[in-house]
Length: 263
Image 1 (tube, rainbow, N blue to C red):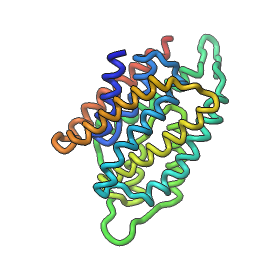
Image 2: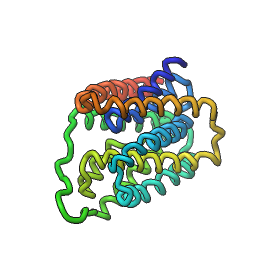
Image 3: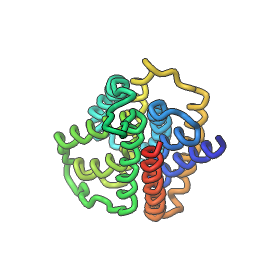
Image 4: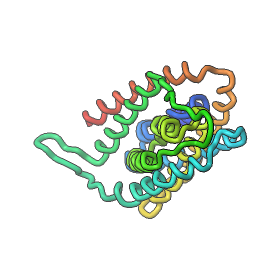
């Protein structure tokens, strides 16, 4: 349990230091350190990630690093997608999804497998650390509305299925499809993640009785972590941290794939 609380602080700390990545650890922390079942953990993760990101977005907004128009355009399809995924798609998935010979694909294995694959892709993004080169230069911000709507919906479905914020997908999309500078894309991403995660969590309330005491404690610790991370971000090289954290996430993703396939 103590290790779980320490990991919750790490989730918030990484969000504050590198602007993303920490939320990818929330489900593994809840499943392996707190003993919560995978489906419930994806729901809890939405609340933890949403509340933590919302707190982290406030100082970014005060510094002028949140674009509300972009957040609304990208966030709207994402919010709708994550809500309907949690309210209707996840409960619709049967406990036994598929059986071929000796291989049984359970709901837990499906969700945790998807999550582990997302961790691997997120880790590669952090390790490569290649920032999109397209930047807004002058004139009005250019929106590629079709691509923004599609990307927002896809991120929403992924968020709903696995309970991760998806910042590593959102930030490049904001830069490439809306022309936002990188720092503003990071701040805007936090607001989008907060809105879609918290609203997505409400989709679970019709068929879930949350352990609010545990949920609020973990969320509170993660919020302390992100506040500390925001302060440290001014003194520490975030790019180097992101690469090291990426390797850690890669190892965790591979571990989950192996562990869940052997259950």
